[in-house]
View 1 (cartoon, one colour):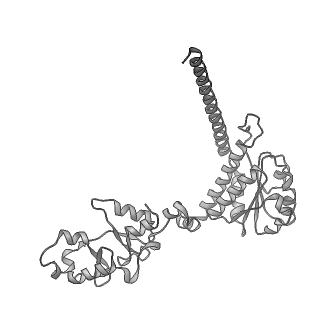
View 2 (tube, one colour):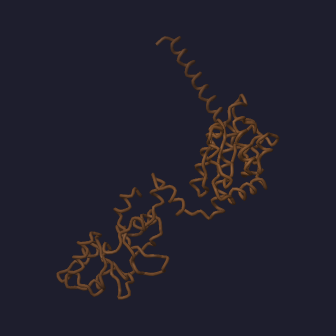
View 3 (cartoon, rainbow, N blue to C red):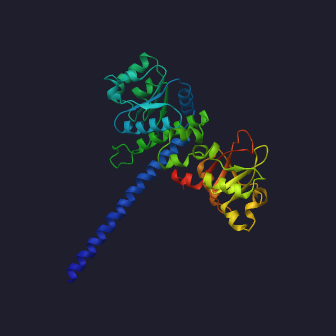
Length: 342
C-alpha cells in the first residue's frame, strides 16, 4: 500500500471520528436541554396544576385530549396513559371535530387541549363548542397570552425555553415538556383515586406486563382438584390421592379443615421403608407448610417456590380475606410457567 493511500485512509478515519463526536455532542445537547426544561417545569408547578387535577377528577365523563400536529401525537399518548391508569379518556382530532366528531364530546366531559403557540387554527371550532356548552377546558400551552390560554378554565404553561432544535423550530423541548406534564396529571389522578396494582392488571391483561400482574387466584386449582387427606389417613390411601390429583403431594388438614402439614414425593423418597404403606400420613408429613394468599401476585408465588434451602413445586393457597388456615386452592410451578411467569 502506497504512502498516499495510507494518508487517505488516515484522513478518512479522522473525519469519521470527528463526525461521530459531533453526533454525540448533538445528542447530548438535546437531552440536556430537554432535561433542563423538565426540571424548570417541575419547580414551577403550583396552584394551576392542583386546580387542573381537581377539575379533571371531578368530572362524570371522560377527559377528551386534543391537539394538532406533534401536539396531537403527544395527546394520543396522554389519553392512553390516562385511560390505562383509571381516568377515562379519549383523543379527538381537532380537524375531525369540525366535521362531526364534536358529537363525541358531552358536557359531562372535560377537554385537555395541547398547543405550544396557543393559536392552532384547527382548535377554534372546538373552543367555541366548549364555551357554548360550558365544557371545562384545561390547556397545556406555551404562551399565556394566547387564544387557547384565554379560553381555558385552567392553564398549564410550558417552560419558556428554546426548542432543542438548532433552528428553534422543530417541536422538541416543548413536546417533551407537554408529555411529562400529561404524565404528571395522570399520576396525580391515579393517586387521588387510590388506583392499585390490581386495578392496573385489569387494564393491562396482555403481554409481559400483564403476566407479571396475574394473581394466584387466577391460576390456582380449586375444589376437588386440591389433594387433601386427614392426619390418620394411611399412606397407601394417600398415594392414590397423590396419583389422582397429579400435584406431586397431598395436603394434610385437621378436623376443622385447617392445613397442618404436607407430604410430597420427595418426603416419601427420603422416608422410604418396608412399612411405609401402613404408616399414617401424620407421622410422615412436614408440619406448617408454606402457603400463599389467593390475592398475591403469581410472581410472588414463583419467588417463594424458588427461594429457601429447598425449592418447591407447589404451594397451598389460603384466603387472607377470611384470615383462615383452610386451603382454598393449590398452585403448581407449571401453572405459572404456562402463564408466562418466570
